[in-house]
Amino acid sequence: MTFNAIKRLAVDSGLPLHEAALVADMTESGNNPEETRAQLSEFLRVILEESEKQYGKAQDTLTGLTGTNAKKAHDRGVLYHSRFTHVAIVASLSICESNASMGRVVACPTAGASGVIPGIFYALSKENAFPFAHLLPGFILASAIGNVIAAKATLSGAAGGCQAEIGSAAAMGAGALAYLSGGDAETVDSAAALVLKSLLGLVCDPVGGFVEAPCVKRNAIAVTAAISAAELALSGVTSVIPFDETVDAMRRVGQTLPMELRETGLGGLAATRTAKQLVDRIQTRFQKP
Ligand code: SF4
Image 1 (cartoon, rainbow, N blue to C red):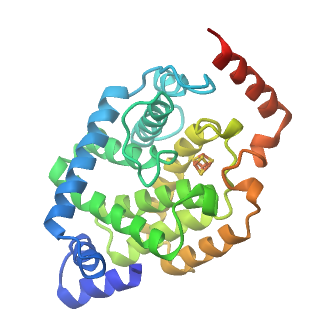
Image 2 (image 1 turned 120 degrees about the horizontal axis):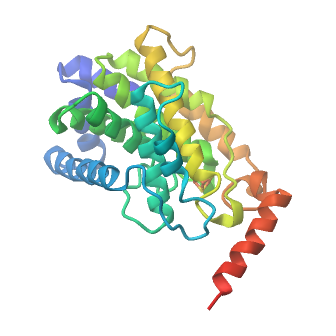
């Protein structure tokens, strides 16, 4: 599946972009559009429910490397960002720290990258008072963007680096935000491409192999990047390289990343002196009776 094919189908059929995405999915995978809509609706319901429940709370995570970031950001309040972006950052941290403490998350597209989409959808719900029915088309479109990346490249950090996980989440979030803000298909294309190309080459280097550092805070930074990309695209800034081709580039970059930078915990930040000291400390924590 390509994003161009979804855009073409929308033009030919006269369907809204997210409905064309459901039809394209049916044609390609045989999935019933109403069943897909119901499943995505349930995922979105869980995302909003967990975001509300965990928002700004401290959590006891597996390694202790994270768990207080959402609370700190929440308690400090807005500094430079808009209130919308602040809420998106806090929600993103909250969900990722919940994931690190074995809480319930929707892998969006993966558990490690599960904070970006909640950040955007929770902020739209809380700050812009978007009702659930208005959010769902954006979530369907976000899912279609993820499907395009899965079909053309990969969503796995082990296969393509963090660009494939958090980069993909940011592309899904930026495209959805642009769409829900009234952007047309080309605006959505640009929003998704702008943020994915900005995260191109991002390596997967979790300290000790645990999905906490840098994963949790990377989600929060990526949600701001996704919002920036949507805002640029909505102002008429276009991506020189279209989304489908950006995904192709991401696949090729991922294929050239060495094994040390693909979720092995052997390269990047994971190979620093501090990371090694932290891993020793985590092992001691696990050994405690
Ligand atoms: S650094 Fe690796 S494990 Fe962490 S979110 Fe990125 S891809 Fe996932």
